[in-house]
Length: 133
Image (cartoon, rainbow, N blue to C red; front, side, top):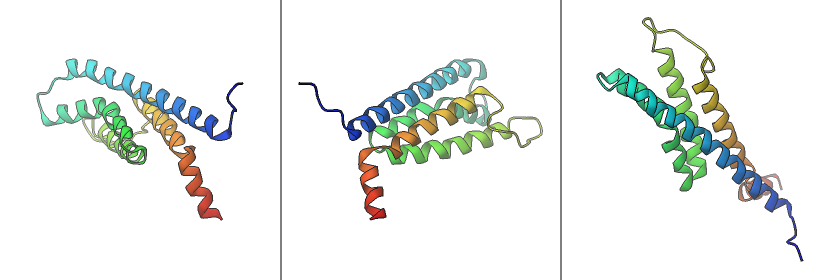
């Protein structure tokens, strides 16, 4: 007899799919950062900071192995730090959109996927419903 499909099982499967997709996007972004690091070099503190902003997304995502909540917070903070880094890259620092280049777009999409996975986890929904009762 086939296993019964429950709403909790669907949520777990969907959350897992979102986490795998978000992790894959962050891994690709980190690989791009590693390739870009070869051209940037590590000559100055500024170069090191740029390289860290290009390569730290997947290692931050790996925090989700221990705590998905902490990983979500760390990824949002990293998004803001990377945005500030982008703004200061010009000769004269200026305010730009974090979505001006694909790196910011991919990071934002991956963070949203991980955030949704965190929200739809069955344990989190039980806590949410308990607050409503």
